[in-house]
Length: 404
Image 1: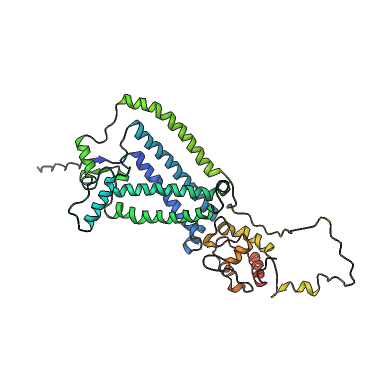
Image 2: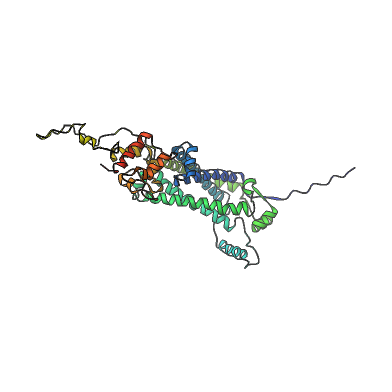
């Protein structure tokens, strides 16, 4: 009879993250990824992949709604995280091991020396390494910056009641730059440190093996074995502190949730897509017709040569009063003063002639050489003009792109 080989003992595991922390990580991962995709598409709206993404999403309004929803979810996660930190610090008296210390700077210097071959030993890390602390506080900084600038763009009318109007485009620039920095930090720093250098599965499984702890967090492992890590206060002290903390946390939660509601529903601004306005509205119509002075020269009829001069190249000439509403209905979602994608603002006559970051998009008298006409004619551009609207804009450019 063969003898059964005894099973190898299971490697000892140490809890690193509880279920609440892992759920927060998943929710933040999903919301951050959604914000990155939907935000960068709006920042680089003219790129091919951005145009494709907008089409897949069902239009720019759906994309913006998704961006706002992901931002709201992220704000709710931040509120929960703050309440959790308060509970651990006040009720459980947990050490705030994520706070930076001078030892982190010494560990960073020692790690650099070791990586360059100038040191003989690695830095010994505790509960969190200096890299993990740097990434955490970079996330905190990014959320603060993105929250403030996002509020300014989401609620511009409320912003200009407190700050000069120049803060709106400044917020747009800071929001976009911080978004690129945050995405690069995740793709380069986080991806390398957590997935490439050594796949750390603790944020998914909740634990590390003894070997992993010895390699990544030897000081914490020593505290665990010495029985000085994770000590909890007495149940009586916990109950007493809960009686104080729960009412305070409940009141703070109500205030913060109302703040989020005000952030999200504070105002309806011009960033909402305006329905196309195809009807031409007269700028000024006098209530009483002004009598003309007597004259012996007959007035020209509508079929006279003066009317025919209003036709240039076979297309009726137009003015900004006719072209402006077309841009307002189709283009200013991305190319209005609030967003001005690629530096192009089509909500004013001067802005349309000025062009964007890549130069002028309108060449007076030459529709075929105008980038605006070329891009609209090629198809696939968000906010595409209809054939009739494109004909009116082309006639306006051919007539000299006049304001009046």
